[in-house]
Image (cartoon, rainbow, N blue to C red; front, top):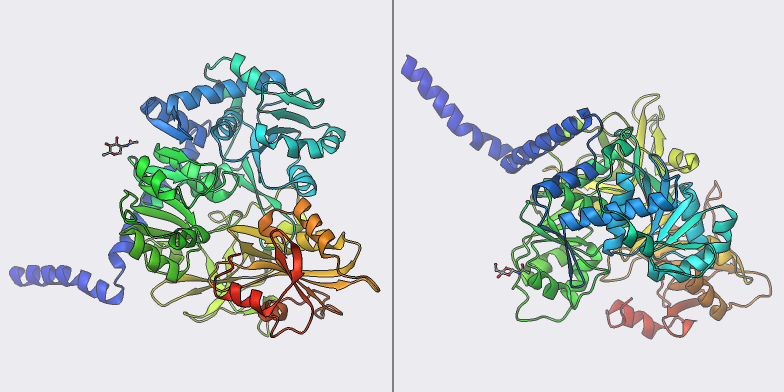
Length: 621
Ligand SMILES: *[C@@H]1O[C@H](CO)[C@@H](O)[C@H](O)[C@H]1NC(C)=O
């Protein structure tokens, strides 16, 4: 009898995996992923318990102790060890402290840098002082720069030497506001800009007391990162220490190991470069090959030269790499893992075919969002994979969305309706203890706009991601579209209202409606504006070109302008974009006058030849 029972139990145990596998063939991967997430969750809980709080800077200092002579950053032929980076940041902290007595715990300092080691040292220095760091996009100028700077109420600005001209443009306004400006140069001779490099050289590199940051807790803001979210002007998303930790674990979740070497060229002022990239690397104590910006021609040479094993990407990058001329040594590299977001299924397949067996780990998440998905299976085209732990931990749903009215569909009782599995819906995530939404700095209105109430029961509160997703019956998550007032182009979010406001500054423009249109063979959408001219005024393409060049980074400039007699609005006076977006920029289909922004010539009339060249990929945008 006993033998029979034992046999039965063994048989059951033996076939159990088979049964589970038959029900879910990703069971083992799901289980492994769940264990990884639990392990990370445990680490986070232990960090939370420590007093004073264990922050990313403490992690960095632990790594300095663990391996002082390991290379931390390689940049343009220079190599900095963990210990050197530590000392360098001590110096910056002391120099800033000496120059500005008010730089203490809780103060906000804005950084205006491109990717370079000084950026990293200054960021570390400010964290050591317990300051909150606001990361300005180094492409923005004049009005946008001032707007972003004032979002976070910083009274100090530290800038890279090569951005001096951009600073000088806004200096009078900064001075009016009593802002102290520091520049990474020896001396500057401009009243109102203080040099920093000379002071850093004289400063001591002795460690700073952890007492300086002893009151920081998980909810204290660590960073402000600018995002246009899905609506309106750029806003400063508040990244508190808890959020910073969560994002920095993305590397570990994706399988980065302590012996990896990461290639980092994505801007450090964005969340993918800063949180996933830099903070993730510090978390694992690995070496970073830092580059000022992406270069398709140097990409694989850099990877080979530095034995890079992990790369981070955005979808466009993968396409640029696939579009670069084929070489015999395309597969000669040590890259084993690529982490990022937004690669299209066809590019993904081509990338693997061409560059070899690299695990691509697509992730979904927004800077200010309160949920993330990771496609740890590597299924082509998916941005994530659900598993049981995910579903237990987070409360989220895809709900039906009305693209004409641009709002979720509500049933007769006024509640949202979940879409059936496999259908597209708007991702909403319950705002709660585990999924907090920290919102935007000093912008209650925009923070409120991202919240959705009475979703499934009266009084509940959800984060409106603004993204349309689809989840299939195996739990794979697919990105479908982004709604609202932004679109993505070249990996950057473009706020349509910001561009429209700029166009309205032109004498000849009465009204402007800005939206993104799809271009064959490109990720994202390119900027297009439909404008109504003032009575008896002509389209002044030259002036508009100069204007957008002065005020907007290249990715945000409208590449197409359509002239309409009047602009359609919805019942609630919102501009109608859906139809315009669908109509695109084909002169064969649109009877209105159309213009195309040529790099050199400015706005020129759109022709069928131009359209064909763009559609065929001969003219690259
Ligand atoms: C890369 O790896 C090779 C072989 O393992 C080694 O000889 C070389 O020194 C490494 N290069 C760098 C820059 O570490």
